[in-house]
Image (cartoon, rainbow, N blue to C red; front, side, top):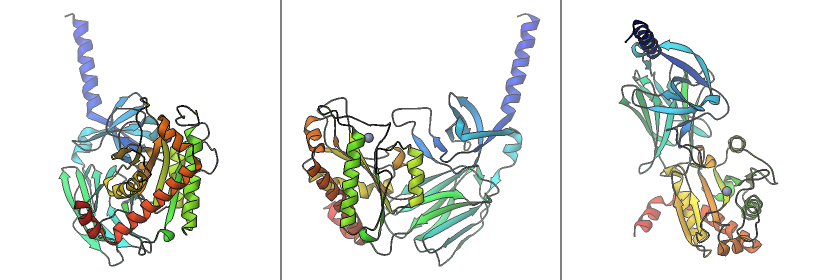
Length: 404
Ligand SMILES: [Zn+2]
């Protein structure tokens, strides 16, 4: 090897070593930054790990096309779209290793509407929430954090939270467990307070009166405007028009049943992006959301009705609706979990996606074209919600029945 080549190699090695000695810091921005597990992609996008608040501090370790790879803990990484991050400058790896971020104490309390778990921190760090069932709990991992939590103060004003505790699951992952009083999850939301010094987990309480007329119900008619969705195999009708017809019928059915607070994400042929829909829903703060879509498959023999959820805690609502939908004589396409659909993403309220039937199947399509069928579907979804509420009144009885 020539002397000059060796010199160049040494220079390269020195450069690589110095690059590894420091790390880029970045902060999240925009309305809905989210983390993905990997660089996978399909029509639903990459598998989502969860949403983050804005201004959350992350450590960027690599770059892949449109994503940055960020280090959450010594064992965990995530991918975040570059447009959702602002680089803040570099910090030495050695400094980071010798200055672990510490958790402070925890306070559990409630106001008139919700319960809260508040964790003291010195900045906004990334986190991920999970729903657990039997018993019902919310678990929240806070990344890059080592415990210096020496007490958890619990006040009487908390009505839904039974117990709160934590575990250091990795040297730098701090997990908070929040056990609920009721078996049903009614939703939770994680954010930072305005100073960014407290991670706040809001827990939605089960309504005191389980009467559908007292609930705020949101309905989303899938697609719209420049997003037509699927089309009928023989009729060529567009999914966006029929999701709206069924959603409108559901609104009428609920109104007739006495539901006073109903919100439709669209009532016309409007173009609406997913972040816009999620923002509108956040504003309305529903007790539950029903999304209406019509399915389509490459194989025209595929048919039937199906319901979808993302998180286990919201599964019972989708099961109750599917049960009723099957009584319409539709075939069963199934109850689908861990579904990476945008509107199944929010954890704030129980939600069910109903893929009524297949536009790509002749038999299903014939039904979809019939206005009487829209009425019947609306009635079944309404009854499904009522069944689900009844299960909450006697959850033990319902469970025993289901097991027999
Ligand atoms: Zn659709």
